[in-house]
Length: 111
Length: 114
Image (cartoon, rainbow over all chains, first blue to last red; front, side):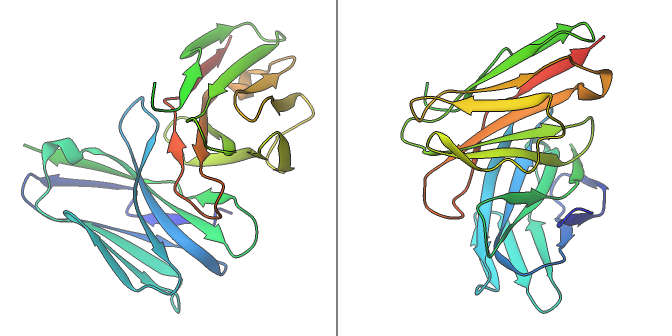
């Protein structure tokens, strides 16, 4: 099974609303990363949070990490139509240099 | 260009043919990764290069799949005797050598096996 699992699988919101998506994982990690993918394009790195960090911000993005629950959340505030994309979490285990991706959350922001 | 470049962007071929997919990473990035993404799914890890060597090739689905990297730069992923289940988008990413760095992705090669 995949290391990272996103929830929900799909999310539809109005422009200006906040979007929250969650990621759960199974084993100990070194860091957790969030990526965005627009249709037909590659992934774009959004934010990285290390295992000893609990919260991180970047612009309108806020990421939390709870290692006791093996979960992370990504919050996009004041969403825009341009935020429409799929969002993936990816975990890096303590050993090795391989990211393991979840199945993604498809976000639709309606204007 | 400044980003990861993949070619071709689209490839349609008949079942049983061999295909070669190319990835040109960001200059200076010594780590290179190949992933496979099926329609509407997440990414499946295939292989990881550090320089020209592949410390982790655990994700290659079968011996029909192989990859090489020369000069610490360009990489090719080869699929021999393609099957319909090989149809997917093949994504390449590169990163700095340091452990756990963010990965920079190309736009992928969409492979369709008829």
